[in-house]
Amino acid sequence: MQALVKTRKGVGFLELMEMPEPRPGSGEVLIEVKAAGICGSDLHVKHDRFPYWPPVILGHEFSGVIVELGPDCRCYRTGERVVGEPHTRHCGVCYLCRTGNIQICPEKRSPGWGIHGCMTRYLVMPEKLLHRIPDSMDYDTAAIVEPTANTVHDVIERAGIVAGDFVVVIGPGPIGLLAGLTARTAGARHVVMAGAAADEGLRLDKARELGFETVLNVSRDNLAEAVKTLTGGIGADLVIECSGAPAAIAGTVELARKKGKICAIGLTGGRTVDFPWEKAAFKALDVVFCMSTSYTSWNRAIDLIGSGLLPAQKVITHRLPLAEWEKAFSELEAQKALKVILHP
Image (cartoon, rainbow, N blue to C red; front, side, top):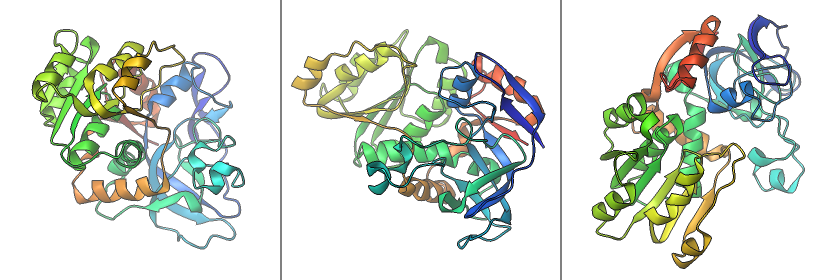
């Protein structure tokens, strides 16, 4: 089968090549992949800025149909349409796994970097990590469940957004836009979407298209002053940081009200952040760090997308065959695409 493989360590070394079809083991199913989303982590693997164990097939955002059951499968049948949590190889016995936090188990090896992923025709997954998708949900939309489950976990479950909150989202990439949609779905009264000069055009235009109340380009708009004006000088109830830019992370403290919350989603790529700790302390802020997804966030995301309350599919800008992966990666890196779906 044709697969997009990171062949060895270093920058680049991606190749579309023939790989053997996998076979499901005990408790595993074989899935025919119908749609595979490209995540920022896939770009990081390409540029050697994310942990990975080559040679490895890229991709963890997927939807598909079960075509074969391995031994001891009890919960699923062939023909069922599914998505799946990328928490494979978690150990099951450490304190994190035993407390229901398999997503941050130190032994976890997710598809796309730790084990073979979904940018190919067939994928093996443990059935215990699968979720059914409704018949009304197309495969491309279902491939967006995984990043949406991230924002549902981060914004609703971790940060605890409250209906009526004033929210600022920094970084209008796919995760930032999904975070804003999640906040709105959860009852935010006003969402400010803030981006940099490089975001003008596709990303900020998409934010305007999605109907966010205030969309700002911080290279020409004073974000802190705008938030003060819109909140009567109080500040935001919740600031969601999705850019990973050190200066933007430090600036979240100025935006948040006293006793407000900062939801940290964006990763810095190893850069050091000069954070105004004392100011955050005197504001008595809650700072919540987020990583991956919970079991419950997947069901919530599927239900919210399926009901139409959270139109996650609107962040998709490109649909391409797997053979055009180079164009897909190039468009993403040039910020000419938001979310690309590959069809194996």
